[in-house]
Length: 158
Image (cartoon, one colour):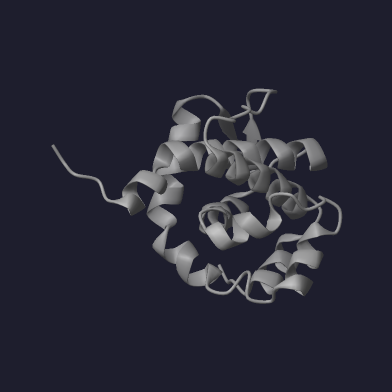
């Protein structure tokens, strides 16, 4: 039996798929279209950062992204490196979302859409509850900003 370290317990495809589904659902409810793969590549590197989650999970949706940046300019430092190092986890999490039929990829538009209407409410673990709340805010913020603006704010390139 393999002994898992803390990194593998926290950063696993099951949790990643739950966060991605929550993000996709909120994005879709806000914009009435799904996010693209570049959007999804940014989600886990941001949401699996405890400092980020703690600072944004209770923020207002409207204007919250810019207010968070104004309050703490270091919030998004290292997103490019985390995105690259977590790409395998992101792809495994996307695969789990697709396999579990909670998200579908519309191939002609290259957009991900939620297949269920209700985002799970998870209250048994406070950290996961905060991450889900942060995923909703991130979904809203990403839906209300263009990808090129987000890339400039987060200092990432594809």
